[in-house]
Length: 390
Ligand SMILES: NC(=O)C1=CN([C@@H]2O[C@H](COP(=O)(O)OP(=O)(O)OC[C@H]3O[C@@H](n4cnc5c(N)ncnc54)[C@H](O)[C@@H]3O)[C@@H](O)[C@H]2O)C=CC1
Ligand SMILES: O=P(O)(O)OC[C@H]1O[C@](O)(CO)[C@@H](O)[C@@H]1O
Image (tube, rainbow, N blue to C red; front, side, top):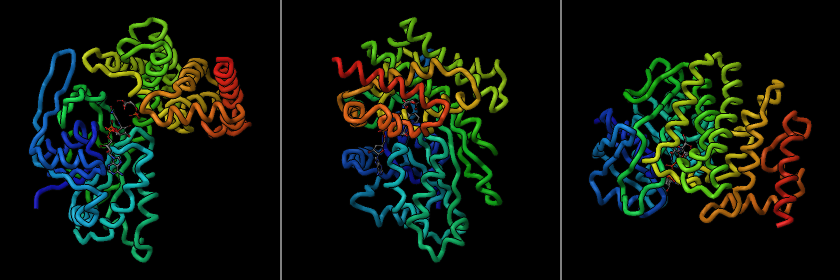
């Protein structure tokens, strides 16, 4: 039996990042999704193209050797595939992990293979695999929990690659930036050793990588998106061409860099190079990355451990500067009632219906005695008063 991986989420990252690299390492990929069109399209087309874009031009790779199953209509099939798979990955969105956990738990409980299933969540969230594991454990056969690690091993990951929204007629094909980083913990695999996926950079300690990525790439990307949306810009490239927004992005990344350098012992020079690289990446004009995609789901992005409150809270606790991050939070609070973005409508509702204190608590989960709390409360009050007067 050849190597088999189950990929939950046949979307941009699922097809354009995870499946590309699993395919490259000889895995058969079984996509699992809930959207019928995704399943149909993957089942009816035996290949699709991934086109890598960079300022050196474009390079196209053809992906084959995959299948697709709906976890909505064919759950028993998905369980059977999980019971004999080597790896399970997911790119469904951090808030969806709780919905894929039950079927993964059934698959783990059905396993008799001599090697545990490698579980690797590929989401923009810190320790997403631990979160998924927590949901899975709630659905496992309690009587067999003591043998869980013989049947599954759980490794957190940091994934970084920009996959913009695809052209309407793209079908399965994905246009994606050439740059990528996929860092995964290797220690959870212990004596079994990690799966052989050549694109992965295996590390013992992931935290420096995931915090650096989330608080640099995602903080910078989302800052550009929210300032850009607020200024009526179409793409991230357009936003960064505006010198005030370009400065706001660099100012926010100067603050997160100070935290990353202090906390993780990464050198100033190395972090500056990393920052310059991501500003260049996100302003890539060929990606045509619209600000509403990068700013999507503002409630998630304003939450406690995420790309703004996460670093700003740590900086406030250390008595370090976070004014620029307050600017990013201000613009994120104004990402309201954006067509197709349910969370942006929910954000507007919260700001209209709740008091500033209730809204601050609900959005950021900051305790009232946290050193960051008062500054964020003032931002919420300001945004509420401006929207009231509109
Ligand atoms: N787009 C990007 O540039 C990057 C995205 N990410 C992260 O990757 C994840 C996915 O992002 P995208 O691929 O852009 O989103 P996407 O919306 O293109 O793909 C998500 C896929 O998950 C599927 N899905 C939803 N619920 C499901 C369920 N219960 N079971 C199975 N499949 C389900 C959807 O049908 C869709 O096909 C997110 O966590 C995102 O933050 C990470 C790095 C880059
Ligand atoms: O995918 P999220 O979490 O909504 O964040 C948006 C952006 O952050 C990135 O994932 C950067 O890693 C972008 O590629 C992505 O479009």
